[in-house]
Length: 186
Image 1 (cartoon, helix red, strand yellow):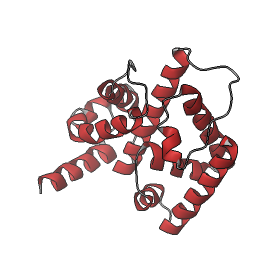
Image 2 (cartoon, rainbow, N blue to C red):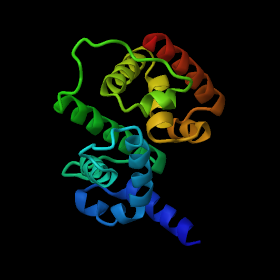
Image 3 (cartoon, helix red, strand yellow):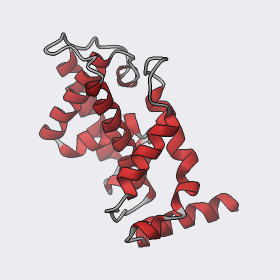
Image 4 (tube, one colour):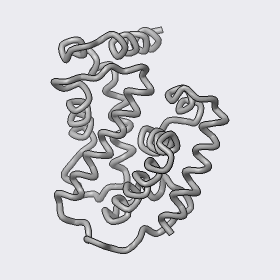
């Protein structure tokens, strides 16, 4: 019952809030979920990474509800945007650290796309990010499916709901996206 009340409160805040002040009580309600997303994204990072999941959560949260907060259509929309913000922070961090080889080789394809996202190698991480950007140029919805699936950890039914499409459409987009990404990363 408490969990349902919190879920309703999160939904209410996300859909009704318009100013940074309106979002004041949101972080304690969404923190655990955001921390799980951050921990999942950080799982493949090197052990001595200077960012920790807690810092990643706070940086992403500030980007989402800072001085110019956005209107959110649902919790899935918010969590998807949070996962995307975290991914961007990690990409920016990898570039800033100068660990990326300019014009380096291609990513090695593993058995699962999730394995690629969790790679410790920044070259692989950036190659996957570039392939996803190319997918988004070719098919924006399929790109959204990939981001929600790999970075937010949403299941296909949740993705279908977040995007407002039938489950079968989300499944087709996921199949297409995997094929597209595997081809680009060969």
